[in-house]
Image (cartoon, rainbow, N blue to C red):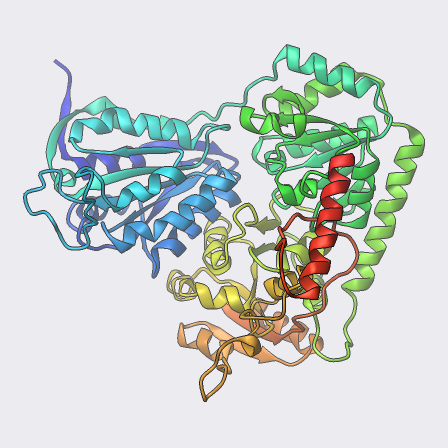
Length: 620
């Protein structure tokens, strides 16, 4: 007779999660590092009790906002290159719907997170319960159905036995290289507390195996045919160059062996050291002049583990003169840009191509051209970021320079964290890191508010490293409460807040599209008699338990960074910045639709420029 163990559904769920392991450089560790929880009705009695019973094996962390704690969990997984992860549990109503933005972020970025929102009673006896969303056409819907479009796998557990199939399926998605993304298991509150006789072997310790599929021989043959005739090839490193085990080494070896220059997407930045002579820097809308120039001249582009989104391709313009070879574990991604598909693990695909190419090399003139461009750009970056004395307010690039000097003078294993706005563009161009993972950017979803919460997740993943969060005032005001969580957990962050008094990035985009400054900078918004608030961000951070100071210059910022490094808890440093200035070098066209009809001459001119760019894309 099979041995069983009687547990509630919630207890069985927690016990199963605690039994999943992964082999790491530090030895065997639990796959799930813990669970972030904000309890409410719908999860406090069932899941809450189960987590308490297992808190020695599966730690539970309290946060202050459901979206933010999911961001933290997602950042933790990203910082571990998807090899470790966390779960998140919420109540049945606003707690659950607060997860939707974070789930979308994980979905877009192909990052694992297990979402465990409470749900309404399966029995329906007390319907409608507090916070229940009633659908007048479908009695089976709840608020959690909002999570279906942004989950890679969704299941509602309406009987305890369903865990026996749902959990293995969830694990398969969370650890699959191609399907990886958010998994939602909706947990009705009555079912959480129901008992069932589970097979004891369901809870035996299991070491998770991460697959790395070999590339298909037919795919390799097609790619090799294109490469052997190429004279001006370009490698583009995406996130897959970091997530695939050994892919950074494979990328560097391929580049060096075959003399192929390398450009990097936001997700792929740090896969190759900034010092490498073949490193062209960032590509695309936020790219360097070196990478974008060579992208337009290349005859073959080898896209390694990238989604080829519009910011990478310049809305489909940059690679129009090239054959694209897409190395990816996801079939959906290999089909973009009319690419030659190589379906397989990035490291294995690069290594196989390199062996089969044997003595093939890029044209020496092309290599010299690329190295000259790369060196010129490195020198320009050094100049831009070395400016200490500026007239008026500094801009993002000069602030980045101060943080970079602090980084270079201390531990070059620092991790810089950022997300939406202008800072990602400036950091993509200007930040220099030699360590894979030293650049942590959420730009797939460009989600304001990710920065502080994401920084906490990165710090939890790498507590031994300094984590520097760079954030604008707009993003900070959206979501900042996890500063208090970082203090409570003893997870020190250095937060550099650039205050340009509004949404400077979108203000510039608005004007580039012919619009007038409107509703972005605080000065251009509807205001009452008291006017726009004068926000003391340093005082706000101190009110959350952190250290905080406001500095007046780049020199003061550098001194403050020294103090922040010596501190033992989270420190916020605020500096006022210019909302209008940006790094002019680099970039390329990005398609943002402009009104076809307008009484504004500025909009009319912007529309004409837009149509001219559309025509150029058609003709290319």
